[in-house]
Length: 194
Image 1 (cartoon, helix red, strand yellow):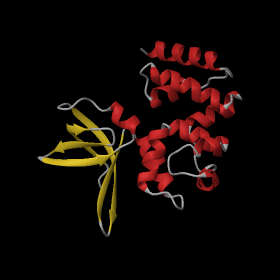
Image 2 (tube, helix red, strand yellow; image 1 turned 120 degrees about the vertical axis):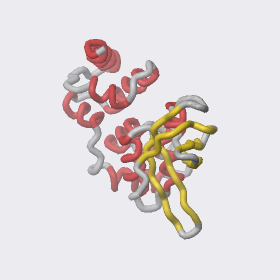
Image 3 (spheres, helix red, strand yellow; image 1 turned 45 degrees about the vertical axis):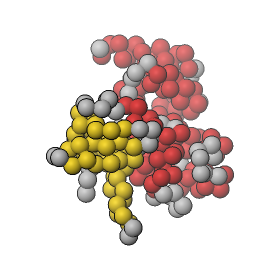
Image 4 (tube, one colour; image 1 turned 180 degrees about the vertical axis):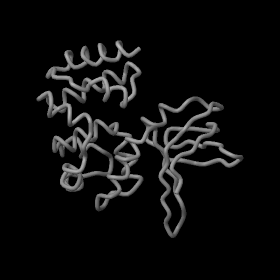
């Protein structure tokens, strides 16, 4: 129904943003990672959205990119996971990190998400492990690299300012199996396209 909103950031705090578009202020709940990527107040932005319609009201959720929105959609499809818990999960881990934890069956890491206990974490892994086909898990299979090494390398690259999509493209064909080599490979790839 509402795929995305393009407008001006009118207000943002640690949990939500108000985007003015066409004279209307849309309030969106977002993950901390997505909020951090938004420009400052007064600047224009483009946010992917998910509209939840319930008997007691409508809620609008925003995402930095399509990958984060897809992860949100998969999470709310799991029995017992609502939109607020899905946003909490995406605030604890980025979408690629969460996908890597699910692919690895890392129930302990998923249990660190506020509001998610061990049984719910097991259900998430059970219902989504075979469904998620992320570039990160594909690289892990190709390279024989441990998911945690790819996750650490991805986190380091994100801290340097690269987006998850840029990192995914940069890691294509990577056969390295340790964090330093993965980062070097990605930086070389990113540098050749600059």
